[in-house]
Amino acid sequence: MTRFISALLVAFLLPCALVRAEEPKTPPKKAPKNAPKDPTQKPEPDDDAARLHANRYTLPEDADSTALVEFIESLQDFEPEDDHESAIHDRKMPRAIKRACRRILELEKDKEAPHARFARRMTLAMRLDASPEFDSASTDMLLDRVQEFLASPSLNSEDADVANALADFLGQNPQPKAIALSRKIGTALSKNIIIPEITDAGKLLLGIAKRLDLVGKPLTLKGTTLDGKPFDLAQLKDKVVLVDFWATWCGHCVGDIPHLKRCREAFGAKGFEIVAISADEERTELTEFLATQKLPWINLYENNGKHPALDEFGITAFPSSMLVGKDGLVVALDLRDEELTNELKKLLGDPAPGINLNPKEESPEKNRGAKKKPLTYELPEEEPDPSKKNKF
Image (cartoon, rainbow, N blue to C red; front, side, top):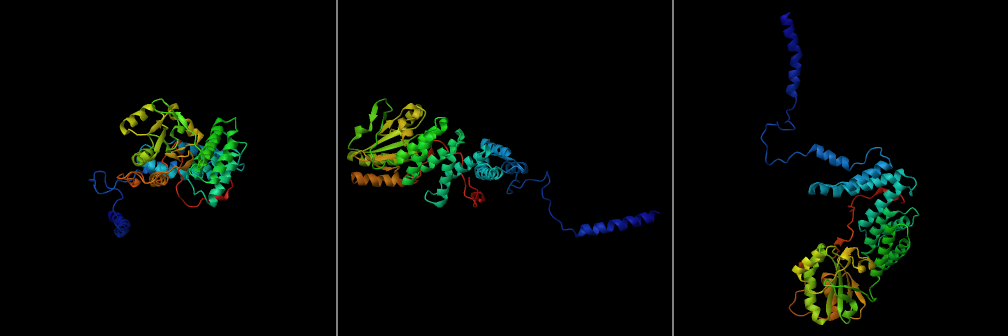
């Protein structure tokens, strides 16, 4: 009996041993817990954290419009804990919102329904904030959709986001078409006396139209200097004047200061002056900055940084400027660095000798840097959007 059992065990175990012997030997996926750490080996990714990131930006399955709106709002409310998480959020949030909006528009048959207008508002604002090329067929289509959206009888206070994004976009394009569109939409929206946010957006667009249309026209400007004295631009008759809208918190504005100082030193004796209008809300921050920088020009400040000219001319980004000739007419808008230097040479002749006016040392960028109202979205470049077939 014992021999029979032993033979049976051998017959059973021998094939298993042969199978194991044929299996390739592979190292374990993870080192034992007590194994010494390899300093050159990169740490394994946190599976839970990676899964959490993936889930945060993944559309909920079988979600209705309400759930998708909540999904978008959760992304807007999310606050990253560190730079790495912030970089992931900045990259993934716009695409996730765009996909959610596209899905909402597929679900909602009535484009004027609240959820559909929510998705349209988000999509239009994001595309305007992406600063598309002004003279293009796609931009013409976008502007047509914006006009249709803002002309709706269903307009509400949140829809002012689209009007403000439109103002930022048009304000960077001093072209006749941009001026006409700003004036047209601004006039319509400013007549809305029921929704203050819409009224304000309309006034902003009218201000932008006025600013973009200033070239070749006289500029009227009054205010109060930082030390409390009244100021009138008419006091600087027969001078070339740069009216500079700026703030201490604007990096590009501060970066322009060295070049502006050299320009004033080079052309001041020939009749060049600078009038700076600060948008700083805190007066103490401005005075402390000026105490160290000692800007040798006129500084206007009032209403906690809300000088009336900001609204009058639709100033939404800094620095913004207007160059006024000796005849009191505006010569150009938003000249910086070499462009400003060259225009001053045309108006005033050669600069004083021995002054380096090369602007490349400080601020070679031409774009205005800081927004009056920071943009919420930045739409990254990606593959063509299939939802463009939908008219919204």
